[in-house]
Length: 444
Ligand code: NAD
Image (cartoon, rainbow, N blue to C red):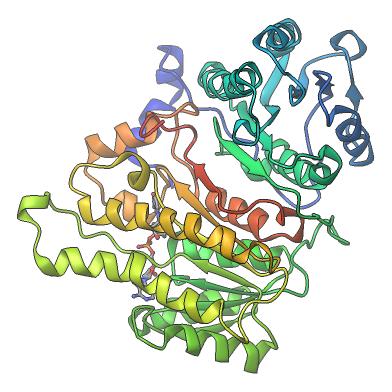
């Protein structure tokens, strides 16, 4: 629901007066075409030929030169993964600039590179690192709901990276990534199988979502269920009524539980295995705010936030990653926040907890890789929820507008990103922190 301010600035009068209008973003609905409009795939990198084939198979009209395509472009895929020297970046501008001029509303730019951390030659590293600055800046220049994101391959052998790269490119081209802008995702070499049924990529999976009674958690439950997963919705007993409704709506089961209790992990695992036969996907979404300036913050407020948002996740993961927990193909996705990256006044406890979550992801990535499990985090920016509705007017408007897409995100945007990370096809995405923030200026 739009608030009064949004209603006023989007009114016909405000439009006439030239007040900048946020574009209605292209969001995913099952069965939608992957992109709206033709796709230019160019750059001469390791992946452009295979990506062009995959895009054609997905039903897109693909060209390898701008002149081959009519009308506005739905997307531009620029594969610079083979650029070995800054002089190779001339192609980026020569191909990119005329194509960007022809982008349609809500178009996508996806740049492909090679992870500089895997390289040794200075010029090679410089050229690849340059892609990040380019993509983040282009994201800030694009208008009308268009986004720009960067996919970096970390595998030495491009053939091994190809399926993972495709999964990331597919996500960024689709409406699932509507509010993901100016981001970088690293993709490894784990085989990334395409879903048997693209409309239900999570079919047969059992997922638990903590904090599912409302807000972002309820939407994560809905999107995972839409994509085929059986969902266990977890929340505190006080939220029992709305939790039961969420669980019913997604045809899953409800589990009333405080995630800070010692045996929370064991109880979730027991519920999952006894009621549904396994546990495959864990979404650590439960979180609380207890904002106060650091010097005025009580011990209770400090401890409560760290307990719910951070310590409970570490404890539950020990169970989920222990014997009888997640197996091959297992997925853990944690909710961080841009406050955990940029810091935020009045949120020392919250930002500490959300930065700690990034620490969890970085620490576990290497430990789980050989077991075919991934651990990632999603860091939302300003998302329209009950929580952000309660933020004072001026702060709320600044939060909502100070991003490249000039609007707040929806819970669905966070949920779609999590649902992608949970897919078998995202097996090569591990240890990543993906911001869903419309390229917020905070921590950019
Ligand atoms: P919300 O307050 O609307 O929902 C959080 C849910 O977690 C509630 O249903 C609550 O009952 C549950 N919960 C709290 N403590 C719990 C506990 N101990 N055990 C079990 N459940 C518990 O919040 P939201 O806006 O939907 O946020 C969801 C997640 O996203 C949180 O981790 C939050 O920090 C993160 N996040 C939100 C935003 C935003 O803009 N809304 C931005 C960045 C990050």
